Length: 262
Length: 238
Image 1 (cartoon, rainbow over the protein chains, first blue to last red):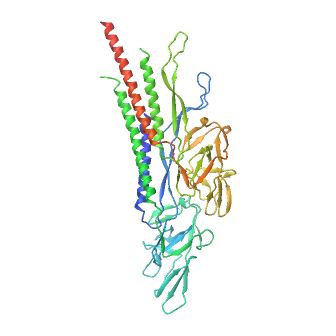
Image 2 (image 1 turned 180 degrees about the vertical axis):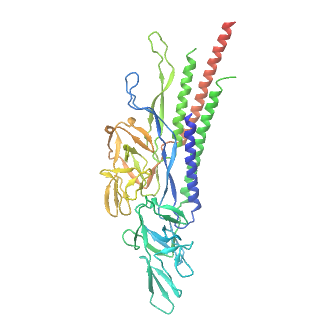
Image 3 (image 1 turned 90 degrees about the vertical axis):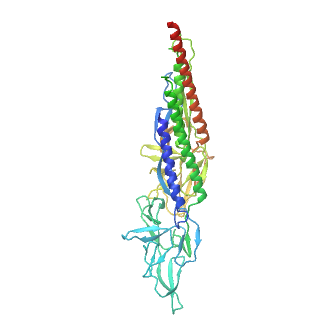
């Protein structure tokens, strides 16, 4: 009976949804996290009777008969919807209002991209992520800096002890992609470009389509707990009903077995 | 042998087919843009020769229809999720020709072409839709705009005879080109939303119970007829 296998594909698809929802929920407090979703498609159909074929009486069959083979997950799509901005008051917390990613230099020298702008200073005063990866282009904050100001256009200026005029120490750049959904997650809030995302285009915050920077804020996770809970409920129910289809197939086979009384 | 046992058997086989179709619907209860299918059964007349004057009673699958009814439209907030309200379909360019879908969960290729998750281009009025720039907006008539201006219009079609449409898997439908025409003004597209499957789990549950019980009834009938034959043979031999 085909129904058994069809229902099994349905259960597998729902399991995968659960995995993705669980990951989303686990990152509900992760700054700059972007939620994912699973896209499903129906599997190929076996056409037992094509519509429009002639029946034995010489009449056309108006609609055919097709039996499908279940469903499958085709893609997990990352949704780059903005997360809520949270005020922290920390001078090195930066949020992007609009499109764009911060560029991060990985230990192997390759660039990765992130929306999580909770930066720190390392021992040499360089701006780094929580993992110690360097921000690119690099910004080094002088030892004697009293305060740091990051403008909406990415210009970083500091006031050093003994001076009244702030001095510029660098400009932050943002990167963007034609298709951010095609980026590959690296973990640690980092994304790397792929064939699907296209190459990064870099620019100054506020210019063209790039967003502006907001100092003292971080972008929260874009996971909405209520939305995920609904996803959890629907996938659990779908899992359940597919298991019922398997049970029905099993019951029917048992009934068929009982045809012969031994 | 009495024909009755075969009639009951045809009924049981029909219910097995019904379960195959119902479980396909249930496997896709969370597949965006999925359209459920419904089987109709008919009595097949057994009368093949004039001498035979007995009406039939055999059951066969007469008809299967894809129920193209609207699924619920759920907001996702993703600008490239587009739902259709009304009897329209998106046109997808595949290597096998034009295909049609109600699943508007699209994404982009690196060159900005609007594609399905399996990589086939979504067609606009003048070929594949190319997205450039940011802040993509899709109007209710399918016109796509971004900060770079108007980018084209997503092609929406409808079927002249919806019953002549065959499912191909991957959320795609296929039909002969004469069966396709431009959609009417009553069809709207909604950006940031996805059309859910139109299969209801409640209907599925009821179908499962009905199928199971009917199958059981046919089995009872077959067993009964078998014991009647057995009894007849035993009595006749005495």
